[in-house]
Image (cartoon, rainbow, N blue to C red; front, top):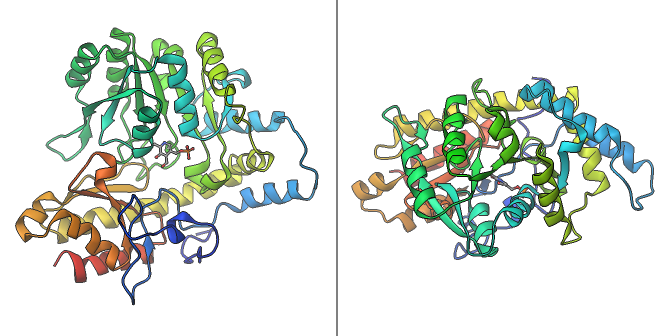
Length: 402
Ligand SMILES: Cc1ncc(COP(=O)(O)O)c(C=O)c1O
């Protein structure tokens, strides 16, 4: 391996929510572990790996020019994004004018919904649902309409197209959030699935906000298909959102962007985003993106995906082979696994609350599934060195699933 994905980073005292943001377990943060256990951070969706060297080099080069006045994005920023989408996602028609900065992908979701919805409108999402969507939609006065994903006979999460259609019609839905790859289910949608979903949306005039923040984190050779590329309709009716933040562990720098081909839609979303006067990029985060979306950044991301694939495979197989009554789909993308523990709780007599706590107590700092509309499940982020994944499951064997 060329890059270091094995050292255990000491993130304590380094402004990291994942390690220093633990509480008493009463709010949305997990509780600190019991005396004698360190915490293995598996809740916040960031990583226990240093970012790519090319990111740090690009930022350092900019720091060597110590003036940070008002600035404008340089051509190389747009070119880096266009190159990244061409070489890694097979997109050949992306031009500078289609790209616009967003203060976080969730900021982009909110701007897009602001352009598409009136307060009180219904917005379709799939459930389990990323907690950020739940807040972004609810906080702005829209209502969530959940269309549940279903596990097929092979244990793969699938959309239920009939259910989506029924809910769209019954609730007069005209905007949907589509998460691709899907957090927290770890699904990388196949082309035919995205095509079918877009056909349902097209048939009922539903504009789509496609959150593709996870689209570079593909496991075991799975391939991401950009939503806008599946049909001429999708090209013109989908607001797509991307960021280097998940891939390169840059969430603390803030730096996301939209791709919107349709000029009418783009003007509306950009206007909406401009109203807060906060939707402006930080110059260092621009340079971080250029370092990330470089050939060296690409090599680093490829290696990362191999590390995450091994972690996710280990976790999936360990759960399948060791914990009767716990079910979990194989993650195809992202680095999160959703483990359904309902049957295990029933068999063992342990309450779900107790189970979540039992993990936290021994430093397996996983996420409570209720945050994702999935009571009875835990979300486990395997974005730490492999040795920590093994250690986490060893503790679960010894202290939790006994
Ligand atoms: C699907 C999805 N969208 C958006 C975000 C957050 O993105 P940002 O920090 O750019 O707002 C996350 C973070 O976990 C996520 O999983």
